[in-house]
Length: 159
Image 1 (cartoon, rainbow, N blue to C red):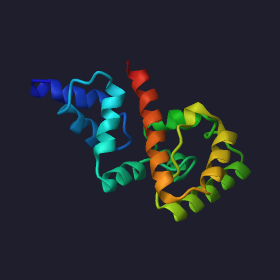
Image 2: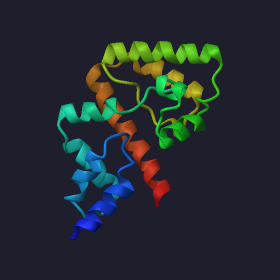
Image 3: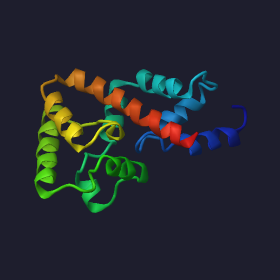
């Protein structure tokens, strides 16, 4: 990238890949070109400080959480949650999601992250329950890996 316009175009095009975290793409511009865009973007995440990684994780909404209920999800998150059926939950399912979200957040200090386009609501609930047994470091690594999957699928849609 040589011109300011090209840099701005890159950030405008790919800035939506990371939930409320354009900083990843803004930093990636300085590392272009990448042999593999997804790997290059995820390397920016890997090179970020622990606090920045945690901020990236915390920028994601809870699954079937408050933002979903009040309609303030980003377009991409709303579509992804809908693809897994999270927009069509029974009251019992919604209550279960809210209880698991609260327990997970209380234990780890950030929302449960899962690439929901690769599963369904039963798979999501099972993953939430299973991952509650993990330690915080394991969950940070898993959340970042799941963000990588989310970004990979979002990137494929942009291509």
